[in-house]
Image (cartoon, rainbow, N blue to C red):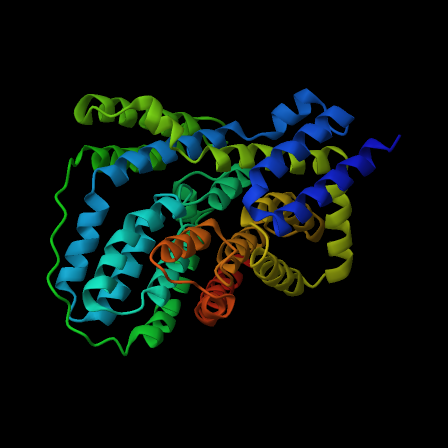
Length: 424
């Protein structure tokens, strides 16, 4: 019988190979890998339960419900349509849509954000009779970029918050210094010019489109109140143990009850329609990474990388950022980040530096690297799927043509910002 330590590594590697070659089966693979680890004795049931960050799960599921009700209110769609209507020409309409996508994505999960903006974008393309492929790619990568800006923007940010015990407000200012939000925004500003270069030739005048009627402003109020409460929660739960998850779940319950009463929605149908596949995927990933930690593999990886970089902190930081960019172009950023977060913390301790340098660099690389390829992030896959339904096939080359310069520009700006702020 194999040693539990070797079984932990074997099942982990096998799961990651599955994520690469069978991305549509990632949830099944993650759950199967987690169960095999438990049944083989590589990790016990109590250890597996403890490995799951239930605070993060509460934030994720609660935000899924709030985002679903918020999207159904048609408020985001109305904002998008007003922007298209007021823009001087098609180029600026597309750029403004990308900016709105980024803003929404900072507070709503990336896939939901793409689903909010896509119908307006596709409608614009049909009315002005132009190919929507580049526009939809731009919307997807804008969503992935800004999703890293706040604690609730996307699962990787939630994972970082859980590991580093960071609250919502810590993403803006942390330990008295500008935090990850400003690094991401700098990357967004610089990469905006990349998008401009792609769309500057679209000088067509926009035709008026029918403005969407808002069904209710209540979900917007729920989302705004939740953001304020999350910002305040750091005063009561400095260790990021449970309060943020409880707040998000409470907001989700309030949102779904309101939807039932006001819109006569079907609660069971709404709950079933949520992204439970990603929810289960996250649980499986927590257990897979937990098995590495329990069996000492995280320390082995950290020791190897520490020996590789020696005392050269800049080399270590650069490796973490750009290796995560490369790998997240082909591997889902959730398992990548979940694996590397404890490694980054361990490496920081060995080098005697503030772990925020490596942690922020890792988040930037893992979140933005997914923008390079059509399979690098869930939002990219959804955008390509929507285009396919409209009769447009997105080739790997087409996506990379925009995704690569956008990513390298945004990553470089954010990478330099984090180094200058957090290397001391």
